[in-house]
Length: 149
Ligand SMILES: Cc1cc2nc3c(=O)[nH]c(=O)nc-3n(C[C@H](O)[C@H](O)[C@H](O)COP(=O)(O)O)c2cc1C
Image (tube, rainbow, N blue to C red; front, side):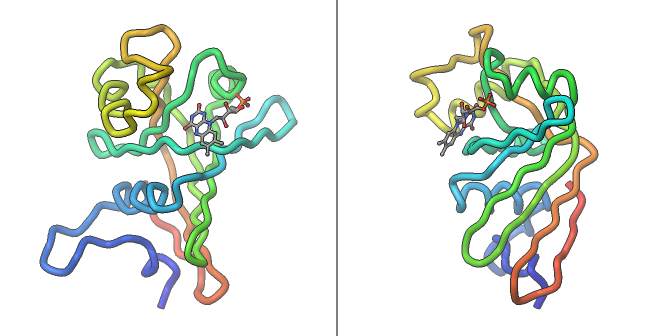
């Protein structure tokens, strides 16, 4: 069995999930993932929890006032890593700033606890989606598997 077999799948008989949906379902299950960015030649990493599939893309959310946002503006290359149930996916690619109200509202609807701090109409809320991205699922018990996002 490959590691990707361990990631969430739609129940038998139901429509199969896309790769993006499967990665997002894993992030939801893990609850916390770690987002790495670059600040010049210095790697930066921090815990994140926001994840949403919107129009077939994997979105995350942050605040424009945060250093992470400024790092991604200068260099959109990023990697995320999560771990749960013996499996750790790493997704890497570019994070594109989607300055649109709809995905911001969808993110806050999925994660209503964010509404205490963010609104789709403020100037701080930022959602970004992965572009040119791949996710590799690894485990100690199976060969790594890479899927396109
Ligand atoms: C479990 C957990 C989940 C988090 N999820 C997010 C998130 O999805 N988006 C976000 O902007 N900050 C999130 N944070 C807060 C960031 O980790 C924190 O603001 C961090 O300092 C941002 O990185 P920076 O200082 O390099 O900008 C989360 C923190 C924790 C502990």
